[in-house]
Each structure stands twice: as structure tokens, then as C-alpha cells.
Length: 272
Image (spheres, rainbow, N blue to C red):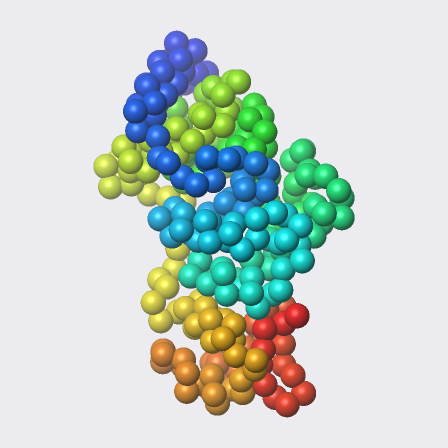
């Protein structure tokens, strides 16, 4: 593969993807109104979570917290109850903290550096918010986009993140960054899939069933339905195989993460 990308090939690639997308674009709720708040919420939800699981939760979340101000003031127990089913509950807490930071600033950040100063927002998410909310001429590379670039001959599986970013910058459809990235993601999820291309992701998610992540999620769900519960009560309510030492370790981590607190009567509850 040449170090330089032929512009005619780029334009043909752009036309092919956009022509397909004009007939096959997915109707996703956060795309209907790509406000900065809607995009931020959707991007945090989509971290390590499939679109099919995020779509219904996004609607429920927006009904509960329609503005960034309502999220900033959200009751933690209510927030986690609404978030339940998405996993990685720390994301919900970080999203609330990010909302509080934005409210304190009295404006939504509009640079990569300012966005990365928000809790839970890294390099990819900061770029994605600018792309989808503000249509900035930036490129971002997720799993689907990486696979499309490789399968289309512009990149290879051994490329570093920096090299992939350079390729993505080179093929960016300027002036239509929002549409371009939506199209690439849809093309990767529906046409150039992992099974059809044989291209493996750079990392794979660990098995959920029987994992500590599953137990953590179950604990949070129980705690959102109670005012507090002792360790033995948790063991009785948990519908999974966990012994007391393992549960104690998980509870310590949940407390450390700021999701759970231990009251003076030895009852665990959602942290305020």
C-alpha cells in the first residue's frame, strides 16, 4: 500500500459510501436532534455498548433528564435506575459530573482540549462530539470505521492509532463530517462487517456472563430498589454464584468508585 493516497480513489470511495448511505441510513434517536447535549449522552452510552441496547435507553434517559441542567441536578439513585441495563455504571456518574462541569462553565465546550477536561471524555469522544454536534471537519476512528478503512484498501490491520488517524484525516468528506461519519459507521455495521471481511477488532470485550461486571450491575439494580441492605441480604438477593469474600471485594470497589456508600448500620446504599 502506497504511503500517499490517490485523490481519485478517495473521491470514488466517498461517492460509494455516501450513495449507499443515502438509501440505507439508520434512523437513530440521537441523530434526529444532534444537539451537543444529545450527542454527549449518546457518545458516553455507546462506549463499549451496542447500538441496539443504547437506542431504547437513550429515549428513556432523555425523558428523565431532558436538559443538561436536569442531569447535573439528578438524584444518583434515580440516575442509576434509569441507566440500568447499559452496564459500566461509572459512566452514568461521570456523565452527571460532566454535566455539572458544563453548567458551571455556562457554555458547552467546543474544542478538543476543553471537551477532554470533562469527566469521562477522552480523545475519541471529544472528537465525536465536535463532529456530530457541530459538524466540524475532524476525523474520528471507531471499530467500524477502522474496519471500513482497512477493507477499502486505505489502511491495514497493523497500523497504529496515529497512522489510522492520518488515513481518516485524508479521506474525510469535508463540509459533511457529521454525515460522513454516520455513513461510515452504518457501512461498517451493515456491509463491511467483521464476519464479511474477517477483520478483527484491536480488542475484544470480556465475557459478561458470570463476570464481576455482571455482579456489579446486579448489585446496583438491587440498591436502586432499596433504602439500604446488608451484605448477607445482598447475597440472598443476587441471582448469581458469588461467595462472601468475592462480594466484599466487589463492594469495596463500588465504594471506591463512588457508586455505593456504607452507612453506620452496616447497610450498603447508593452514594449521594
